Length: 164
Image 1 (cartoon, rainbow, N blue to C red):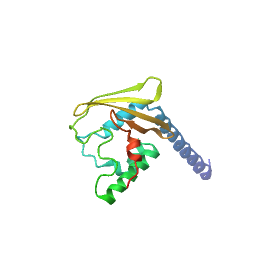
Image 2: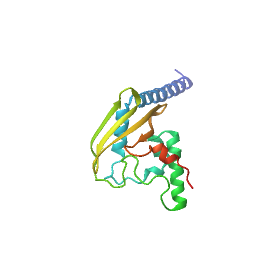
Image 3: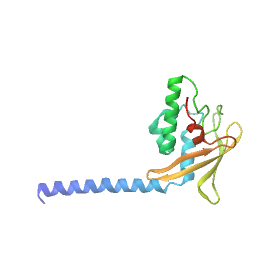
Image 4: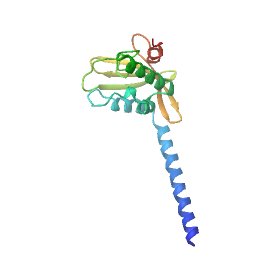
């Protein structure tokens, strides 16, 4: 094989390897179940961890929330920066609370019968709570499109209020 043929073969092999890896990685992302996605969210966002406020970080938000909710979070955070206070969101939307124990226990996730995009999430942290997540399977994997709380409006409704 000539040097040019050898280089072309190596380049073709390298490009093929990149595309194969990307395809496999994408396939793995799509194989993730909604339950695994929600477990990963609660693992990432534990009250006992020293996690910086990620509700103002578009990149982190977009790993868990759909485009619409991500934009609403960013809009609310911009309001907080201008107003130096609370705008629409004054609690942690993942835990439906302002105060937490250091660890969340008894995380249970169950699909809602007849509603393929809804999942009941029950956990214990300063009491037992059950939230209903609406998930969307996007091209980049599962994303949260809303969270319904036991009392009051949903997350999307809260974040959609006009900021004055």
